[in-house]
Length: 314
Ligand code: NI
Image (tube, rainbow, N blue to C red; front, side, top):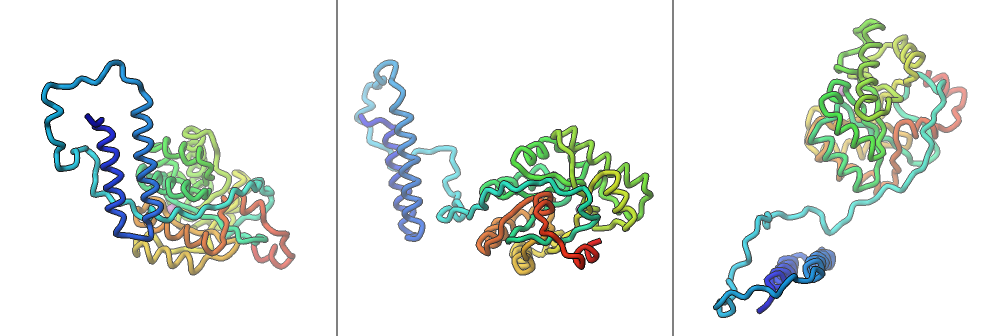
């Protein structure tokens, strides 16, 4: 009698081939994948020696094989999107993230030699959207910078821990997302230190830059923040207005159109449609030859500015 595991494996292989004959482009990968999965199942099954001969129920051998596939709990209707095309991969970039303490108060982009950019994601961590984004980034070897809200860090410290563990940078986005330019210096200090301390508690790290909520921070506040927290204020050069939820394809096209070397791209991992836009966005940027670094790395690789650039950025 044929081993039912073998029967199932062969049937899976056959189904894979039959299903994929309809799409000749992805046939080689999928067929190979199906075969490897099947082979792995057979290997693992056959590797364990049976403790005793398989019991043979009386009369069982006479029963015909059921005509329908064996029922399982698997969602067999699921279709894996884009399985035929592996995502592009950002190269390993072992760039220093040690930028000078007197680098400047405000940056919306950084002059660099090379097609380096920084993706920034604000308003997380979010238990579903941030983790989904982390999967997307990990598949592409992309390190981003997350400007987190301290209050959300306290709610989802495990998400921050994973973000840090996977090599991303954490930035300060205040504790309660208030418009800091309306607050006193003492209130600003409280907002930033509470967010900083939440990051320290959750993941043992401290932010190195600030993105003020709504981009709102007065010049004298920026100087205070640089002096007291050593945070440069990081704005952005690309804003897809993703928080207005224009649809993933619009977010993608806006970012692809506006991103240039040294750019800092603003997006929000709080919003599911933004995360939906990221695979095509990141692949499009990789196809255009951009390389992704964190904000601190971008600052540290800042090209020697001319006198004119210094006065323009200060
Ligand atoms: Ni925000």
